[in-house]
Length: 510
Image 1 (cartoon, rainbow, N blue to C red):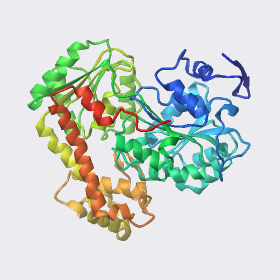
Image 2: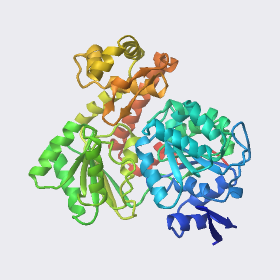
Image 3: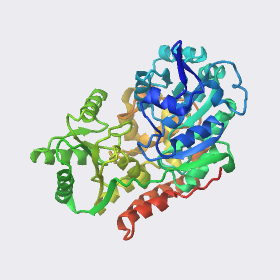
Image 4: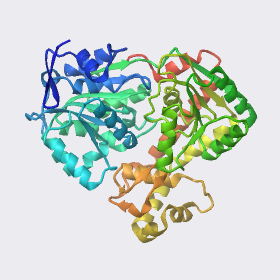
């Protein structure tokens, strides 16, 4: 290893190597898979697209370069905000506000001066962090892409040498992806503003179409980007699909999986789409004397944190959860992940089963397929794809009835929009997309919106008024659900089916 010196809280080195950073900060003796090759590529100024399973160590691919001495991470280009003499910085773009604090806390416990800036901070806190960034602190800064709308952020980052731009959850770049974020489509513009720094995009799930779109949206040519695709095959995960009819058969399957993993050998997650279904199964399990906890969006933040801590500390090894549970969960001994209701897409299913078996030991991933559950997901897809007329009605209410919205909230808006359909979630979907496009500002969280804070800041974007475009997106979402049904019906090798869906073959050359 190279000679390490500690100076003013920063580590300098003579001929420091990536393995030295890995050992010093992360206490690993060696890299795994393609991590070292990826790190050396970005240190040499090469761009990379990384597809790696959940829990595969994607974050080290940008964290290690961020901590390397300045001379080895030099950018090949400079631009309006680049080329200063300040300490270099790695800028990490992520859509997951709820996870940033946890990620930064872990890094700071390792002695790394990382920070984040997002809407969860008070104005005073944001101003303080802008100042510390501008003063040259923090080799790692986590932000959402929406932060680029803020002039004060542009001013703060303008004095820094952004040596590496890391785009986490990169599938959000593409409208073909399963979690589209409109601001991600401005990444080419952001890169130019930052001086076209070396860029690494990372995700666990991306079809070939999404992979190609990621590169295009970044403003890069395919021949500039090396694809590192670790595939989707984790041999320790036992994948199974069981067709069931009714709650009794689902309970029997859950019991059978639990019996394969006795108490004390690890943890398990049972996923549900609907809170009311989760609660029904919770009552059935309690009658059977099965200890467990429940996690869903109707719980307050303190309850969710307590339940997550109980699970992480193995005080209660079984959790019944909606898909909100699992983001940021890095628990090695999850022995099984069961889907008691079919998820909405192959991507969502794959991401959730990726939480199992991170310690490399055998783990079960079981999809319980009941045809009746399909109608729930089809309804969810319809709700998540409002038509242009619905966007216009929502925007009109916010513009012309702002006082009523502030006073009576979402329930009043729902009454005006779809009085006879109490469970219709199109309003939440429309508000989320209007906010992502910058047409409104407000507060969104896992439990919903705080309407008193909603503010119209622009017109409805043309993309949300294009009926053909919205219809095409609806069809794509339906096809994603169909792919999961085809997996269930597939009579051949299901692993090969999944492999083909995600397109493991390289689509870009070095």
